[in-house]
Length: 105
Image (cartoon, rainbow, N blue to C red; front, side, top):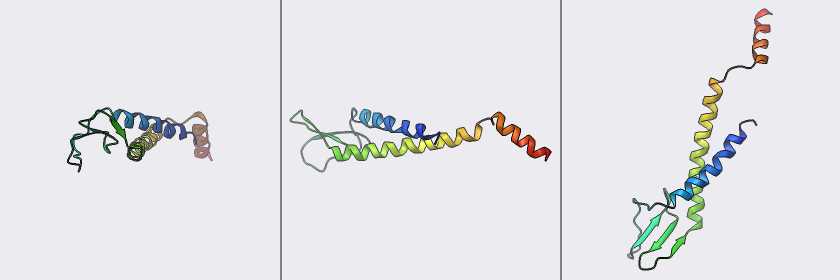
């Protein structure tokens, strides 16, 4: 339970990454529509703009999927960091005293 805050901290980070990804055009996705369309968001484009008009359309389903993708990535990284930090931590005084007591017995 003490590492839960590290996992919960990954969710706002995922939302921030998803929102920042919407500021940059997606270079690798070409729309199937014959009209010129600009797409934003990575890896799933969730903002669309048809070129003759300058209105941006937000696809909320794709945004939620993109948010889920980045949340999964952030949670995996947070899990790896928690495990790595747990292996490198120093034992506290209570654990040291118990180990010494076991050696004596």
